Length: 506
Image 1 (cartoon, rainbow, N blue to C red):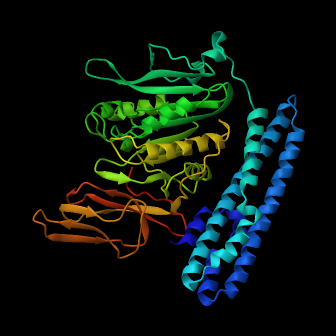
Image 2 (tube, rainbow, N blue to C red):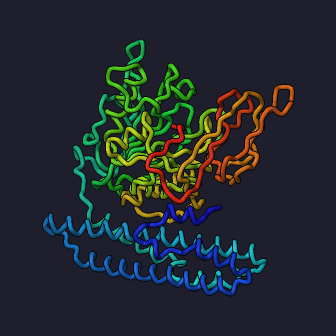
């Protein structure tokens, strides 16, 4: 549905003329259902795409060879920085090239499917082999180059971290029985090549005892980025916890470049009460970055930011749907920011929603500090969902690979994300027994029935229809409905990204 709009949102601007002209192919198709003109136009379009792909791939291959030949371990600092900048640009070129290939391959498949539907002919049997023989459809070559370039970066830019007190690699997985409590997360104090665990105190309860959050620090043997992951900021949103556990278990600190900081439970009081909010009910994702001299949840939020998340250089905030709702696996990110847009695509979601960081949110607090941040919605509350956790974990690993923190893994995404330029919730006008009809991640058309409300006596009270075409990002599943309850979260695909957009859902 509206693939040309999807394509417009994910197009690399400087390469725009070289993409498949999906809109033009549709026009030719409808003007000539016999497909003679369409076949000629299609052949011309894929040749155009393939030419650009080959030029970029050859250029990247030559540049990688040149950079490898230039590298010398004893280069002066200025030369080394110039070399690293050139390699960083090459990595960006190769990342763009793999995205370019995937977008155009998807476009080819979709237009051929549409052509078969319009013409009632098996046109794909004739034209699809033309596509699969093109270099851009064999994108393993670009992915191989990308892996080689990342491996070159990891090898040639490695700056060893000094081991503290003679610590050696053989104790990389040592876990101390007594986990210390600290009031400040000092990343410099953690030993390299180890996974460390601490409690960070953020406040005190009525007995004067610390209210603490668990923090896991995996510090590599080589300097690199600091990536932070927070989960359970809403205390009953739990899928992020097993994701963090699996990620840390799979990491090898001795080969890690940089530091991973993970907070499995960011809202400890809410987690202990199995509730979304803080102990007295306040939503912590609406009071960030908190106040040093504020209410209990404001102080807690302030210390969480100032003692933990301010140390991050990249931030992934893991959530799920709220109580009584179900979510797709989707990402909220500012798609006008190249870094967060890239993180969103790497995250392996079903849906990406453009959403500029709302005030009061954890993501917004990090973005205000200049820390690129995305929100990852991983399924449903109060449960562990292995399928969603697995796919979200692949996405997190993709981001670590892109940052050259871990070696590349060939984990193909399960989904081709739908990119929404905005989204909004549809709310109930009256109370009763609610039934929401479409499934999660289903497309709906303007005017399609999406929900019904019956009275407790069984009489139909209200029907709700989709105000425009869109995809179901999330929906209410609790049949008990009051006036003002959320019904359905609708993602909209349009040609342009708004400068500011907030669906009101934090």
